[in-house]
Length: 89
Image: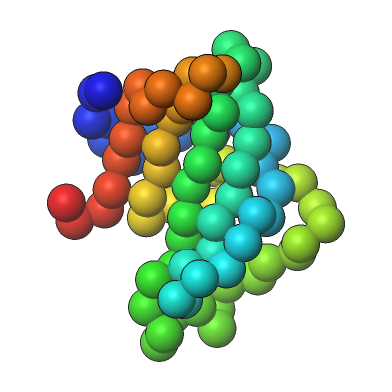
């Protein structure tokens, strides 16, 4: 598993179409399949004071660059964790 920067994740996977997956404790989670077949899972939010500013459209896809991920994990098609990014960790 390799830790990447936010810029690295967005450069490599920024055009991945992401779809809203779930909401839990002030975080919105999205999931998408990258062009290389890897699975991209990211979350934005995490703070009760900030989430009201976020626009979430449950049935629409948006690119990863449109989301401001505070956490992002890249999995292989067999669900092996390949890369991750976490703001502040």
